[in-house]
Length: 406
Image 1 (cartoon, rainbow, N blue to C red):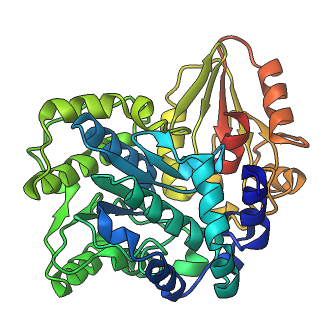
Image 2: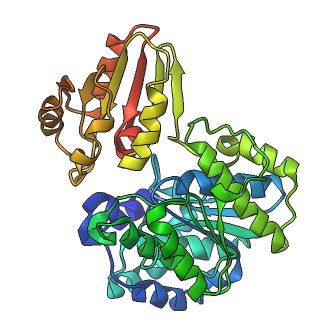
């Protein structure tokens, strides 16, 4: 099979949450455990950090990887979903996994995948773990895909577990309360492994404290660490300040476990996250005249941070290119969106994309006015045509929308 043939098989033959939604979600780890055994337990051949959370886990993962790279370590990075291409999910020191490795891994294990009916996510996790093992990384930053307790990545025993924050997202899988979601994400807490909590929340603190106690694990609340030095980052979203604190608290724990990381490594790592890891879509400025900003924030907590920063941008007029997936709870985000803006409604080019006309009708009920377009690119082009040099165009609502214009 060619690389494209391999991807086509992966995407079409196996269920994948980002395309299909709930039908792709598995309720236990048996498939991943069977795959790990079949591959001879590759995840046991490298050290790791496990990162979960509703928002910020991607940025935090990339910050950690960048700092460790600056410290001279060979760093694996596993994240999801990808924006432009599948190989973004699996990197070492910012370089994507090779097409040939993807082809060979699928070809070699295809019979096993089919006979055990593995999901897209399960076999991709197996691919990442085998790649990191074969390439002999010093440490891998492993981002949870969905939840934590039942996520396919949750077969590792990391140096540190990290939970950035908790919000009401993916409630159909994780539960309808912050406490229930915290319990699911807290499932990555392992016996005697320290856990860093990025954001102290009244509703969830006791859940994490109880889980840490049961596992005899040290628990650190990053926002309580008052003596942490302040650092700047090239990730410019104002919300990144919380992720920086979470990263710094995690680094302190890694240093206590033998990793040699200086303040200069931290400074340079945080200043060069994009360069070192090739991260995309976090308050990314695509052009300056007119200023075009995109961000992948899509749930209430993420959009709150993004919209707070957006309304503080200087502009004469605001243009918003916006699209979502069809299981998005629009009622949970509608009050966050600016009234004084022109909207360009669009449907991301995936099966789960919500029709642009339906989005326009819903928004019009709340006096958020605009037109619907046949594609993300068409909406973006019209926004560019309508905007003057001192306007701002924002593109978001879904990572899939951002992916189409980056």
